[in-house]
Length: 402
Ligand code: ACO
Image (cartoon, rainbow, N blue to C red; front, top):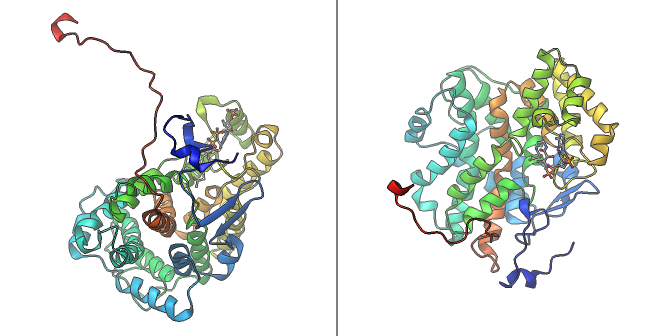
């Protein structure tokens, strides 16, 4: 339906819309989705063209600043991000204080929140230069932190960034290289990870982005807002789905339950089991990101010479779902998370790292949405209404009389 914005400003009428399925919280120039046609565009550019022709930092610039940069502007932007990729030595110590097997999404959220304490000069949400500094710091340091999340889990020393390498290339080196050893990333892997980051870079008002805007609407700083987004992303119904998909596939592989009986369980909604990586609030035809990811999964597995049986299980599940009335009637198709885990696994990431990789990719979108909100004169503090259904007035009863 069409929302008449003047209605939203009245205080006389309150609509109840659980999950905000029909409520727009803002207007935005950033990302366009046509869920029925399976279209996704950033700033008007199709996701297919960006995934095949662009790179992550250029897409980040596009999302945040609204236009594709010319080459001098892009060079300056990349250079500035590069120059901020080191983290404060005390920050490395801070990262070391978390239990090694604690979930990396919790460490990432805490780490991003803590950045505000290390860079107090970048906190003013109303000063454009300060906001640009916080933007660059977040793009630069989230990459370093994400590589640390992997190395900490593995008990390996943290590596310093290398300015001479590209954003994705150096991320893979910082994550996987042995200390003091030459590291050469497979170009197919670099390209695939760059594409995945682009595909995750924004998705308009999803749960985590709405959270970033909600927190930011109180004028909380960018780090506090984005850290809240990381926490929202961690749930299995949102970004956490990529890890849950792999767990699901491994459970099928390791148990006596074959694919058909698993699907029967899903359709009977036994124990609330869902086919993870399937379904989307907005895409009701197909998720254009999933098509690109599936192609990429084949390319990466082939290049790395890995023959993962989990890919066959995933394709088997998809095949059944595409021909099954339960999924057809409910318009449930693979979403971006269905095949990404298989790629990350082939690259050498543990399942717990899958959602932090999503967060790394989503960073430009969160930042762009937060900045757009701060600059929008229509912005008000987010404050939904409720319909009260509790007790009417009661008299307090002292403890000894209860
Ligand atoms: N497996 C089985 N049934 C499903 C699934 C699924 N993955 N997704 C939805 N359904 C069913 C629901 O049970 C419901 O059935 P009903 O009409 O008989 O009650 C119907 O489809 C509609 O589902 P809702 O939960 O109302 O859809 P909603 O838009 O609220 O949820 C969501 C979307 C959360 C993505 C859901 O499809 C889901 O839980 N998917 C699995 C988790 C997942 O992959 N999340 C990642 C999403 S993409 C992202 O965040 C990046």
